[in-house]
Image (tube, rainbow, N blue to C red; front, side, top):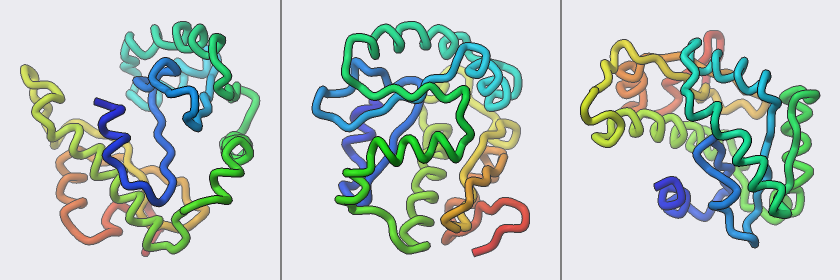
Length: 185
């Protein structure tokens, strides 16, 4: 389903897809790909923050098979432990410099805001989908997830924790409706 979701995205602007369920085996040899690899300790620490202490067991089991698959490919791998977020972004931009220069890329704040809204909407849709947990529906007013700030400033990397129900209501209005404290359109 991940591959189907990626194929359904628009051709422009360029899109970066990330996430644990995507594996090197899913990537075609001619694809543009880079894997950001943390050490086990960093992976656990980041997952504890993202999942509020409740790290999914399957995430912890995915690192070794991914490393094995990467060893069998020519896919670029960046080990992120010694890097800051800014250094990691710079490395990814270096790897994709030729693709970025060819474009198309989001240039205006409105284009950037539309991409941020699409990402936030996709997360809401994941939780609203019947396939999310058909036998154990979520309580949308209690499940909190992290969304992207929609201020669309080029330097903004702020995240906003919202209950799924609040985010679902926010994405029904014209962006920006999900904003970090102190941020505005």
